Length: 100
Image (tube, rainbow, N blue to C red; front, side):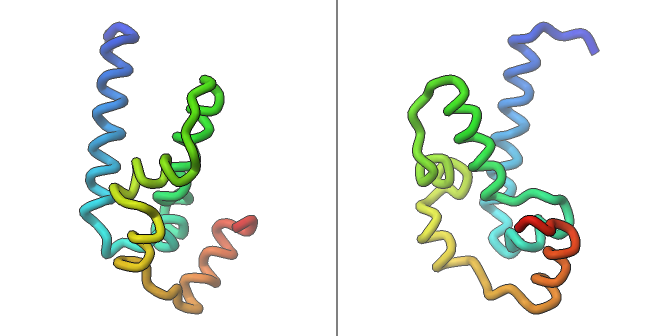
């Protein structure tokens, strides 16, 4: 594939926006399930966004980066959609992501 850097960035940005949109529509998928299956979750995406902003000297808070991913304040999303993790989910997370 031969494309210039600007086009590559545009495609990557569009794919990211599509991923975020998909995750917003799949509120049935819990973050712990994402972590256990893929090793990242919505919080990871928001943290990565904040880290990139920090590296570029762009002021964005953790709450702002989370809202950019969740589409609403994080606490609101948690209250509406986050379930209680089962013992099995927590056990799997400890195996897959021992640091979390």
